[in-house]
Image 1 (cartoon, rainbow, N blue to C red):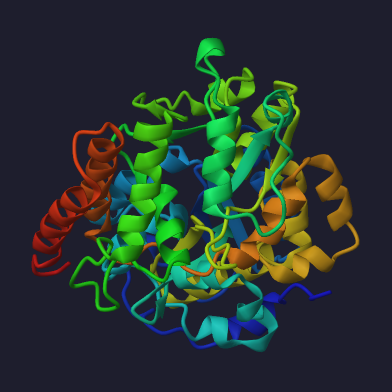
Image 2 (image 1 turned 180 degrees about the horizontal axis):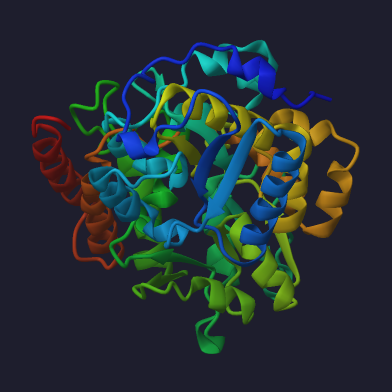
Length: 431
């Protein structure tokens, strides 16, 4: 079991990029407790849990006082809130931000650089999953600590599959198996679909496409992020399979609702296979759905999935506050504290060592299927491209997905057009 990092140990580390301040009103005296503020953006059980943990930290670390605030926004609205705060010098020391926002935030000179901090052996940086480390590191600069991680799996409705004469997915299943099961589970007369796919134009439309491409050896962009490559043979194969399911098999419920009706269909017994993640488990349990969980189907034995890590990002007021923020986050993300957070919220382990703690089994027992999703973190090997132009690329691909699944375009034409638009966006200076 890893010991939590002592405050004194971290305070001796040398931080890089800590010279800038945000105004004399924010500078603290060189002596006495260091006060820092965290905007956590959490709600309900998650907010109570983080506040409970902060109280524990403050009691055990008299040299640092952490103040918690929601930031006046939920996690969804934190980026514009932080952007405005950085402009007005009223920004916090730490904020909860989605990993996909990291490239935008890292470019701000008020974002701290923790690269030297995380080299300390006590932090055990490599104990965090690779996808998390990648999401919080932008062009070699570590801007914070991993906060939350998830990944995509297939949830299956046991009753729907049984009624269709199907067995649950087996280990090593493929996308051909997925297509065949979805087709057999579909019952148009009863309004039952094999699976669903969002076509509302948002990130959810491409979220499941990327791992299909990765599994087949393809990628989204070139390593230098200057060109789009998702129209490769791997990309055409992936989208072609989805088109065949939607247009030929008619086994896909095409969800054009921003609210995403797929989960409701699954809960009501009208959907057999549902690509989703751990965030839906509490709802499924509340709805008393008899469900099971499986890793994604694979390609040539590769069951790579997609993960959406979120970060605790640190902002620079002065050197003492950056060091205090790193001390707090090292403690908060330690295995024992994280197990408390996971038990309260149902979040997945952000460190591999958490799975070896004595209380880990209690967590698994509390959230049915979480064991499969937790183990599936090992299949989350890549994250979406760390470029400020990714949202535009995603939107172009989402449009291609919608046009293809609706039968309005062929796969190659749709992907080639999306690549042309993406390349134009990527060519803009500063991308």
